[in-house]
Image (cartoon, rainbow, N blue to C red; front, side, top):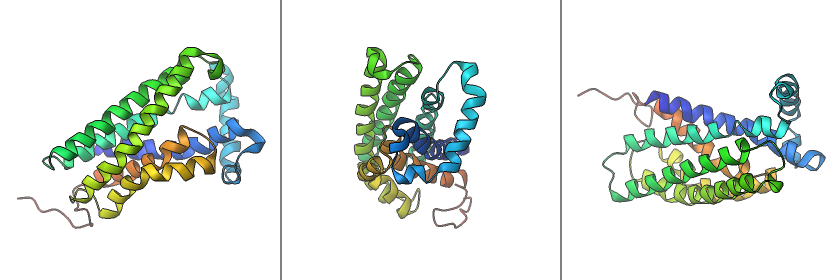
Length: 218
């Protein structure tokens, strides 16, 4: 359980870092002001790529893009951990857990095809383009599923209600975040990934109740 929480937390933090980096690479000088405001991070990312990217034969876009599958793995780990805490919650919990799990797994596959299926322009590679399209459809399923899974989580006490609300609003929140970053999939996935990161924090400290009270052993 703690490993699930750690993976979810790290995955969310990675998504938070990769979003402005990839958005800046994609849009360049036309990047939104919110992205350009993270200039120290962007400069550091450029320096890291300058050190390791050429050795791997990857430009900056693919150097960082190939890390994004770890975000999906972290979200999957956190989801599985949260589901374990909510075992016995009923048919609806199991249904939306499966929707999210399948959506994340398919997004993971699509992402690997898109970024690891080549190192050229995705728009000129049918296989990579198909992977990207596949990923986007799976992400849409994840964002819809998150709304309903968050509602189911609200009925239990696995995590505080405000954390369950973060899951529930992750889907709608993806829309303004995409506009603010001008980049997908990172912008679309960011709200859900951060919600799962916070879930991960509670999985890491699950010996305490959701409101910080220590659980007593029977």
